[in-house]
Amino acid sequence: MSFCDDTLLCNFPKCRTKLSGFAWVTACSHVFCDQHGSGEFSRSPAICPACSSALSGKLDIVRTELSPSEEYKAMILAGLRPDVVLDISARALAFWSYQ
Image (cartoon, one colour):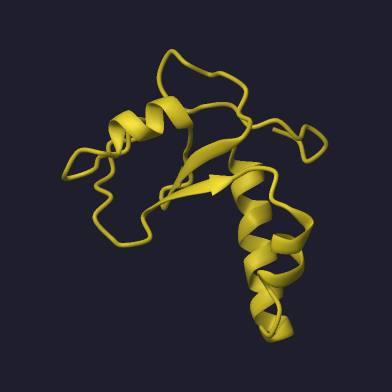
């Protein structure tokens, strides 16, 4: 996926729908539509349906809003050191390039 393409696709096998609204993101860098994420990650232990990785950590699965409000964007990184913000940005770009 190129950085110019701003549409993520569900990584659930046979789904590949364009994501909007909310999505589920995993520590193994996969992303799922709200429907498949809600179904798959309500089970314990959670297993990534794309790569079969165990997702047992507290932050291994996160449900996120794909179009956050301006207020959220203004506050989410406030107070963090610039090196931390750059590290977060680098990880976000790596996620997009992986997709």
